Image (cartoon, rainbow, N blue to C red; front, side, top):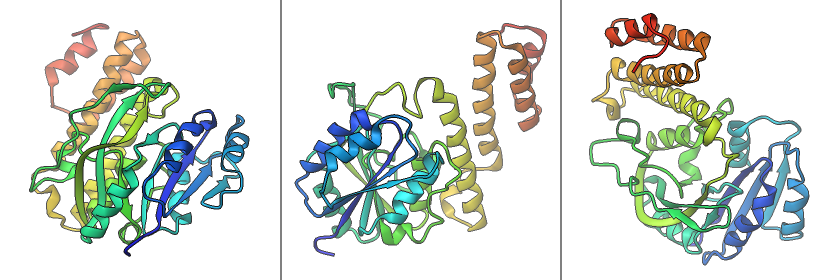
Length: 304
């Protein structure tokens, strides 16, 4: 595996108008042994025509079309299934890679055979590719911790993985609508080691249609919660020591805090039916936790 094929995986839906920048960043890669697997999730705009016009007869780009809209999990799972490279990495169609990204990641995977997933840092950019922010929260996971128990966004773009290790997992969950990458990272760290490269290799475009932005934020939080629960259950079943410092109560608190945030949002918008629905949810999850807070919620429409 001295010059392994790298599969760039692009799950695309209605983002063809951004793909030109993504496409150009792939062509500018210093590492040249790659293929691009593009799966379109039944776009309703002109994305397919735009993408076809860009890739034309370049056989390194392979475009596949879903026969209906299945969602992010299904489409990314299909991307991974269609890949033929020894190393894979997802690239959103509205984002771009730094020219050295593939070369850096291939070097890591060649040097560290025990590594299942390697990640780096990303820059947040605007519509015109101008840098908005270089997040500083992305750091190496401390020794003795895992992504599940440490979190804090430690594993993120640019994430790459060996296909041999991916084959040892259950694969991407087709039912997931959001938090697909997070679910994948949990699975990959259960079968191999994680390597963090302290360099900015990925450019994440702030786009109002992002599945984890703006009005989709709470939906994204819900699926993050589901991914954590699934990983926790999986690791308990396998007696995985990466959850040694976590208890069932700790994970109930994750669910509790998610529904508490929904309750507070509903209250601020004076959506009282929703407020009492989410109040009921947090009461059922941990009945006697923050009891005074729950009583105030029952007695008053507005509370601090």
